[in-house]
Amino acid sequence: MNSIFSEIFRISSLNKFEFKKINDREISFLNDQQINQIRIFGTVINVTTIISEKETMETMNKIYNRIIIDDGSGSISLKSWIDQPINDQISPINNNLLLTLNKLKNGDVIEALGYLRIYNDEIYLSITNIAIHNDLEWEINRRLDLLKKDLEEKNLNSKPKLRIINIGKTNETTAIELQNNQITKETIGDEILRMMKPKNNLFSIEDFKNKFSYTNEEIKQAILYLRTESLIFERKPGKYQKI
Image (tube, rainbow, N blue to C red; front, side, top):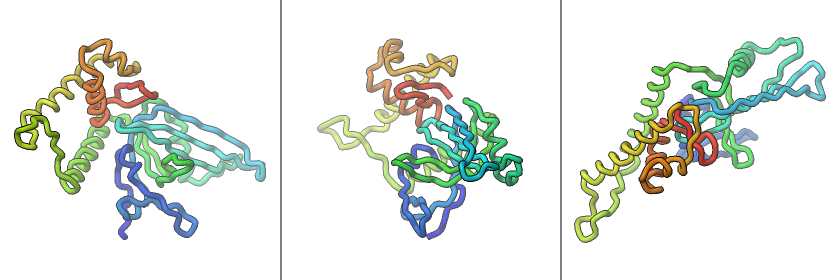
């Protein structure tokens, strides 16, 4: 099996991974292929840092960091555990990571490299490196990379599934019907995006229903479309924020 190193993934795709213990090491697999470190990126929505003094070594602190990011398709925790001597003689690699972690704040767009792990049914990334990219051009290019990857996977793995609309005709959805469905999602999505200014405000499906005359299902489909396109993310359960 060939290993993939540092391939970029959507957060929503990480639930496809399987985890196996080999020689007391937890290894992640995708489609029976071993995955080493992976790359993800997203917007920081929560930062937690805990510094605790180790009981067995008075000269050592353990620094625990947990960052939650969202890329529009889902959210994930990034975690690190760094042992830092009181005299601050920390390794250059860990020191660079720690310096970057200390700068993080909500709203930052970051890229993370690390090992995918699972604990108590929660999938998280044990990070080895992190970079802040508050650069719109960089973010657009990464989203284009993911979109290209999505299209390649769709072309390789499946044919489009067509919904039967006109019973009694052919078991096909016409190109016009498919196009109209896409236009409906995009049209409602554009209206939702205009409503979500300024982007720091949170909105629920009820807010959209009170504003527009669309059905509950139409609004849900538009929200799903906006999340897939990484234009909004679910900041809290049932509460959405513009990216």
